[in-house]
Image (cartoon, rainbow, N blue to C red; front, side):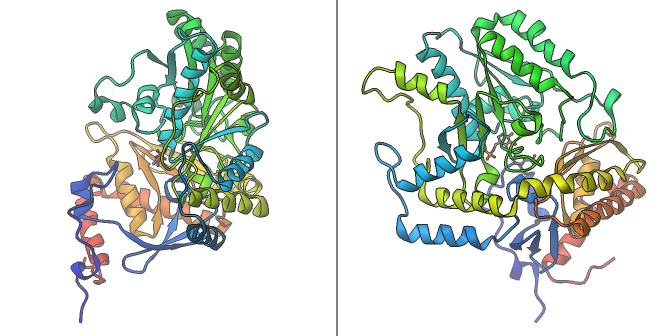
Length: 472
Ligand code: PXG
């Protein structure tokens, strides 16, 4: 008997899919039913190459048995222990392992369950730190345009992606933003880190923002070393170092949000290592457990932790903050197993050695129709297309759909396609990513208006879902 799409697809009506155009998605669902190594298996058994390591969160590749075994064993040993006022040994072991992996000095670890929670936790630690040190008026937070720090109220307040903020009211007050460092007019098609303009741009923090607010009122500056979600924005040389110097000069805590840049993505353990700038607080999530169990971490300099311990009243809870699932045993087990894999397979070094190959492959797309800029660092590539008036994002979305049809998963955000494969990617797979992208870009561009209409891909999707041969 012939399969129909209803044989294969679940009832799609109940699940509200996050950060997704639900009506559109449910008319052309893209569901994965399995994953192994660098590939997903789609509903029709097609192998789809994972060009994005999930949502940047599967650096060691899919289906790692070491992690599965550790998590399974832990579930049957200690499934849960109360996270407040009691704990369990693996929480301390995981914290030690994470501290070892962190840049020097960032060795006090607070566990969360996501990047969003890590961002809000870091902001709260910064505010509470100044208060416990006797500076409660240092309570403003500075973020950056196009920054992404998750979706909680603190994160969207310091975040700078308009679309993630405007539907949700006023969020936090006492927040301002520095400019983002993307400068396509001067730096289009730069390979790696742009060389010019970094110091002047960082100095604007001092000259514009600090001058406006009074530096003594600023608690913290939060930035992603490389802005991922907003479309792969690589900071110019010297920029992060100069921001750090300004923070130090004025007693402002520098927070690096390394949810994307952590765990080898740039060819180093963290962006802090890549740019040789150690922040006061560093947040991470995603790759910490290879994406398989929700977990985030906030690493703080020992002096910050010590200030809470020394200056809080005796017997007081030094930081009234935490989650039911902070350091849940299976997340600790997954984190330890993931860190073991990183150690054994030296995935950061692997990423660093593949980065030049990825760079050449990525920049081979220069000259294709609509391609306005190509940016890269470590194992990350951003390809920005010309914007079409009234149809922002439509071209990139169509390229994404075409890639999916051709067996490659990429991410699109606005007019940008982002590539961030697992660090286990092979050279021939890198070749395939960019030859597929090239085919998809040419196809969509050649179709003109028709190519921008997502419904034109619908027929193909439905055919797959139903195991039907594609009708032309
Ligand atoms: N900070 C940064 C820098 C992030 O990139 C978060 C915080 C939030 O993490 P959680 O775990 O709460 O989602 C992120 C998440 C994409 C994409 O493709 C990026 C993220 C999430 C989903 C998709 O750009 N970043």
